[in-house]
Image 1: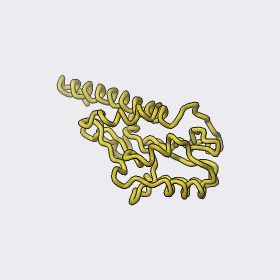
Image 2: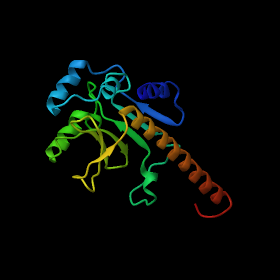
Image 3: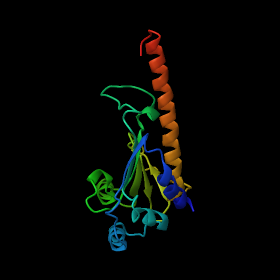
Image 4: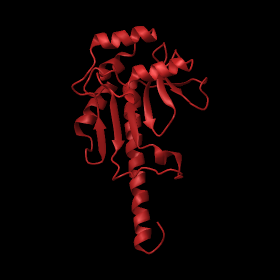
Length: 190
């Protein structure tokens, strides 16, 4: 089961490089999730429900700033170089609005996308992964909001893929920073 891979990953992830914040201790109940499902009009996928009720629900994961300095206003670079984190929206008590799936859904509904429930977003990307009423994973694009790209993956598989891609981007960023430092040490410009 893909969700087991996610749980195993977070038992041994690189805490020195990655900062992880989740709802641990404020997990929602089955009733909390069911109340949200009444609002959206369908049952969320079981794998997502299990994750949301775990201590990892309402997940925010980022590369620590000392390993991935944040862009400043007007910085330019390849798109991937701004994607330093992952957020999985949750239902936990006291969760901040930007990580609350109920708030995210309310905003989508106000924009006319009530058939989609956003559940995952990369930090730095306006696009979101959503569930539709058939519990399919859909990639919603802010540039083409009416288009629905079906992602043939389960929630757990998608989350693990995005975590692995974040790790790959972090390694690429580290290589860039190392090259920049080497140029600087040789007397070149950073």
